[in-house]
Image (tube, rainbow, N blue to C red; front, side):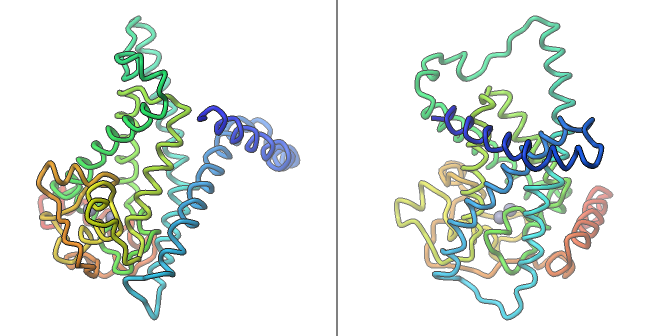
Amino acid sequence: MFDWMADTYGLFTGWLFEEAVQPAMYALGLMDWAEEAFHWLDFFVFGLLGIGVVYLVCRPLEAWRPVERWEDGSAVWTDVVYTLLARLGILPLLAFVLFAAVQVRIEGLIADSGWVPPTLESTFPTLREYPLLALLIYIVILDFGEYWRHRFQHTFGWWWALHSVHHAQKQMTFWTDDRNHVIDDVIAAAWFGVIAVAIGVPPGQFPIILLVLRLGESLSHANVRLDFGRVGERLLVSPRFHRLHHGLLSAGATGKNYAVLLPVWDWIFGTADFDRGRYPSTGDPTAPESLASGGWLRQQVDGTKRLLRALRGRDA
Ligand SMILES: [Zn+2]
Ligand SMILES: [Zn+2]
């Protein structure tokens, strides 16, 4: 199943590259960069695909039963900018440059030592026969990692200074998912990448896992009055569940509902709030106004200042 999806995707990007990118690069005399351009296109198309899927699922829901309506929705556009930069621009580039370099080094070291690191599938070979089950296990493990990363974002002062960019949004929509400080994005990518490599996620399944997690994450930020029912609320993070995390009362260090996809982690570690009646307004009352209503660059600069203050031990 996954092979079929990967093949179709490969055919499409290959076609796009040959028909559109290559001729343009040839005309501009940039053919030396062909390989880099192909990797870039790969990221770009994958980013577009992710945004498309999320939009098709979340936008109708927000139109159906919004929690809030705004006269001036300009703050939402800032989150659209975040999404485009994160999915199509800055982040893929950083991830590609950083991880390609690190990966080559680590692979070299491991190859030299002759040691083959164990993975989930080499420890439990039967998993190879059940790719769907393996995929689910990878998602559960990675989601567990995301739960703890998110808790730490609220625990350490310097990390909260970065994460407060995410929480400052008073007009929360499904676009808000990507509203993060760039440094926070890099940490998140490294955190996720290290766990994925450690458990041996096959490269072919990695994009599918990313799509599933991102769809869940975007949906949980959607401006929609929606919970998944008494049982469903305990199985999957809903817009209601994550809104409570963003609620004014929970801003800061004493939050609830940290889970990204599976609320079971909040339940196990005692941070769950399943009160289905509340849809609080969102925002971080301790953040300067610029973090809420400033443009992308303003928020990055002020987030960095907040980080520096926190690192110097002053109040974030
Ligand atoms: Zn948070
Ligand atoms: Zn959030």
